[in-house]
Length: 105
Image (cartoon, rainbow, N blue to C red; front, side, top):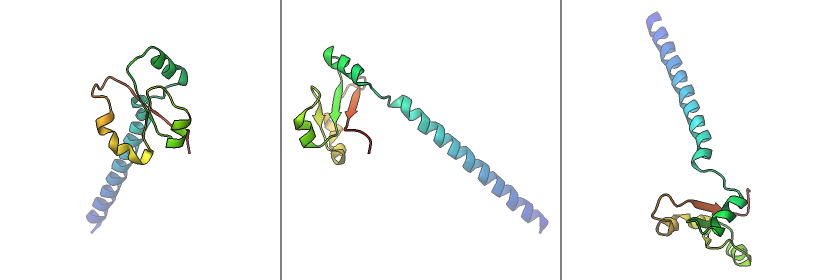
């Protein structure tokens, strides 16, 4: 009977260790998202627009806000319609896609 208790404790320790490693890996991956999707400053985006560099701007604001004023070449898409973007994104994967919105919250 003692052997069964030791085996159960070892299994629990292994499960805890695997869980901790899994959470650590998820945290590291989440921190890398910033490198995968970097923020673009207004000045950087203005420079790209002024230089006519290839860039796809997706404006996530309401239609009314978009009509009141928008970035040149921006495409207005409601956040709940993002699934419709498939055929409107650049086929060249090197062309950056910038999502523009009113702000957080």
